Length: 316
Image 1 (cartoon, rainbow, N blue to C red):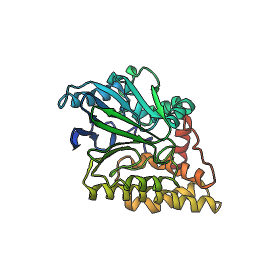
Image 2 (cartoon, rainbow, N blue to C red):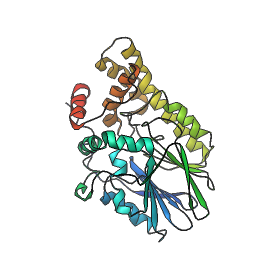
Image 3 (tube, helix red, strand yellow):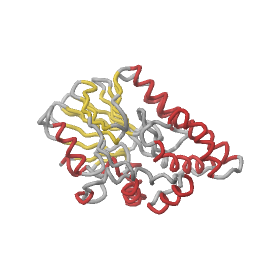
């Protein structure tokens, strides 16, 4: 029996948690759904990743208002994916920030990604009528910029390619806490459809070098304490390489995409089959790994049509 497309069958509401991971630093998590970070400064609030719709973003705002009445001034977007950015309008922020590379990806493939993810995640896009359009940053940067929220400094940094070409992290030095977006996951599959597999582990080591006290990952529970932080970094790296290596062996040996799929499943199913969105991610991950192994550096653009074609070929 063919599996339902992507997350089309996942319509059950998730339990929301709002966890303080450092002084005035919060992680909004929901059992493997996309997370949002909240940084409270002396005079204002910063959001890290906006959710898929204004409806979901308003749930974040409700949680914020239980701990502070300071105005939301900044929305930081760690990358361009629709489930991360299209809720931004709900916060009424003064500034929306992303990397220059991420902005260029909105230009190149933002609408296609919206159409694609709308089909993949129907539950997350409930209330989509309130999305005003693509989310555009008001400020961009190349490698690093610092924002001051009173005395609290937040460093936005590009540490290397991984989940996409333009991922950034937000580091709060006074608490040694980082908001990583989808560069780090916890008990959730990594979506690698737009990934750079060869670079991703090195980027994770750049994160590890901070010797962080806590991480708000892209999906999964907040990571508090060095033991949990390092375990998540290890597991994320293992997931990425366990996906790529068997696919690369098949692709570079002249094998088919379906043979690569079988090799990937043999390596990954025993370790990761119970991770959130695992079955959802697998066809897109294998397709991108196959392309990268054959020297295609820039991920091909996913469209709603290509999504279905790939799913039927591998999961159907």
